Image: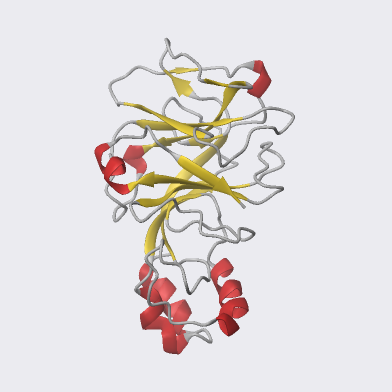
Amino acid sequence: MNAETLFAKLQQSEFSSFADSLIRHARPRVVLVRDSTNRNHGIGNSRLNNDPDLPADFIWPQHALGPYRFLAQINLSEFPDGMPNAPRTGLLSFFFQYDENGECFWGDPGFVIARYFPTNQPLVRTRQPKEVDLGDPVAITLQSGIDLPNFNPFNTVLRVTDWPLDKSQAGAYEKLHYSWHEVDDYLFGYPNNHTLGYDPTPGLEWQSFLSLESDEELHWCWHDGDRLVTFIESDKLAKGDFSDIRSDAG
């Protein structure tokens, strides 16, 4: 969905009189569309959950309770136009802390880490350590999208200081909001938590990065079946510095 389509949806909703005010808060997002028919898990293709492509000498990251688990790889050349300032070449791979007893906490520093591999670096299909080798790989395509925040009229961290709706409209807006969040695996946009009683964005210099739904088949369970959200500082994203990724879930 693009900005024009979203604006049309707002105009056709009970919030038509607020359409101009709401659309000012729209942010671009990259929707990660799963392709169950695509069996071509070629080297460097974007995918979720398994079959990471890594340098032959890659040292698998470890945390206090064992090896990290591969989460996703994104071919940055597949980014659609109009996205936040970020590198447009190379492969970006995400890993997260995992243990079968669920003792790792999604809010801890380093729960999600990222590794960047330039286009000219040879990569090979790599088997995960057996403790974290769970589920099948899922091919994805990257599609352009648009996003508005969850209902939060007092949210200053997300720069929403002139939100036009009040609390009495929260329920109706929430239904409308989820009607265009038919896919909740995406990059950028806004964090799409629904059980947290606070805004998980670390600060004004940070922006939403990778967001993923819980998925039983992929053995992803974030906060009792909710959503994982991650964040990166905007200036570091523009420089291709992925050394500090923050996360939360709910």
